[in-house]
Image 1 (cartoon, each protein chain N blue to C red):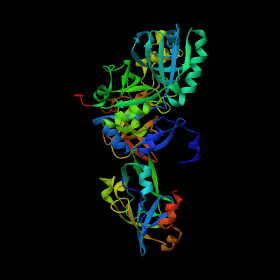
Image 2: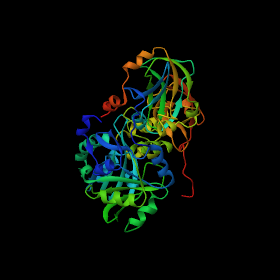
Image 3: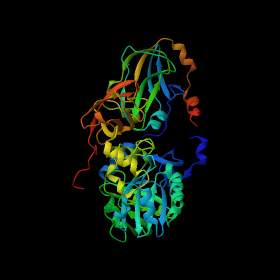
Image 4: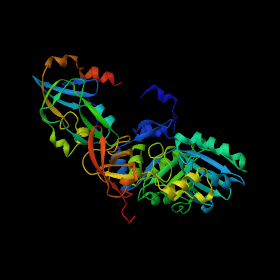
Length: 360
Length: 128
């Protein structure tokens, strides 16, 4: 590891990761575990049983006060009024040009108190963006990044495992609730990034170690950022910086479902126009039909580019996401991807590429 | 995966490749450090028999879940045999990098090139 890692932020679980033999990498200014036992093994543990991810690099912004809802309605693409107390909502943050600044989950803790979870690389920019707009509304914007560690517990056995440790019923999908789990108070959220049942936990950094230990003691496998990436790609979830950025709008990214232009959010006029006129390109999921794995940045013959590409441990082939001209975005369209100079065949496929068995 | 090991009888290239030299022929593979850094190998497409390989130049690729990596030839020559078994079980490269996970056998064009390679102790010292 380079000496530059000295300047990186570390998770409160850093000692535990090192003791567990994790490989650590730099990610968005943090030093985080990329793998423990191996990406494939960890991936399959989440698909078949239960895994726990340290995602303490994620940022949190609290928005509170009488104008909190109005501020978020101005900044977030979704209709914040539709989120009940104890609800969760996915949205994008757009700039006035309709480009995506971040994609975020927001939890409504009370009528006028929200927590928005940001991507680590965007947290400071998001915070500045919220604060810049706050004076027009009667709302306080508070950086909570240092007050929350964050775990994701995912997999068919994840909720059962959490339930045994919890003082009350777990919130259902897209809901959140304050609970005490393994004797530690926390916010339990019915969200995730794997396509599996599960929860995400916002926990006091000084006590997250107790929760981590309790989860591992009950058989949850520690899972790193490597498997987090393969899991999210199998279900077609976006990664900001790869599949989303300021140069692409939510419509072309396939995120029109979380945009309610009628609310007048920043960038909504552009989003409405692109929705009405149709985008020139679309983000599609693809599967390699033969050998080889397309990677981020690989060009597609006739136009288009791969924004995320990896090996799918569930499907045992290369998969990914790519922006392609709309003419080639239809399901079943054959793509020829330039993989390091070798043309490789792929086909546009329906999302999710992998569906968990229904009995879960 | 097993613990780090760097067998004494092999010669090493600083780009994390090994060569087992036998007269004017050698077997090539990647080191324990290389396979550990790559993580689980998922594809290996060997070069064709007859391919010319050049010391210090890439001669094939190994694909892991995370990334694709060039494999550097520790010595120059012509490929005379490839490990076809890795096509169906590329994970052998992780499990047995110095044995069943060998990659190619090469007829050396200049066996004296091996004098530039490292012994196990010198290679291991580059890793710390």
